[in-house]
Length: 214
Image 1 (cartoon, rainbow, N blue to C red):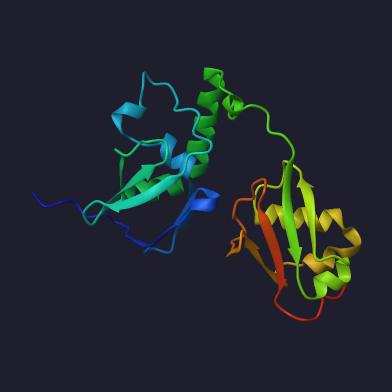
Image 2: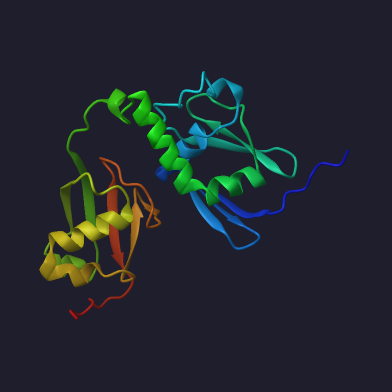
């Protein structure tokens, strides 16, 4: 019997380990960013479907390896030891299309089970990161670097930049989108790149001239 071919084929699969995120693009133009936690808790292997209870405690899970399974699927090796779930292209597409409703249903199942995400890890304390500035940012901000405590709302590069704008209203134009590149721990980042305590974040302007106020 011939193996059923998937209706949609991935054209790109990229694992962003720092952000614990899988970015996948399909032949029909659809693209999704699927958190590793989401992929883990929706794994279809029997050992993770215990008595109908939701899979818990996977907030920090990551994928360590991706293994092709024939031409129509992949196997994800998770850092919690789970390695037996196979994800077909159609399954990954469906997880992407239905991500919002799936996640809402999962959160509701956690609520009914009385589980509070992150409770097992304890209360998170203050988070500090190191900010590095270059070219006109050094002159305008009068500093080359600073250590800052970031609020809970800062979870990725995008929210960090937004926080910097709000923190310095008179200098918000210096942090205008597209006026600089960002590296996290010396690696060029995406807007969704995760920010963790202890990270080194560099803001590198793409022009020698500072943006003007509008």
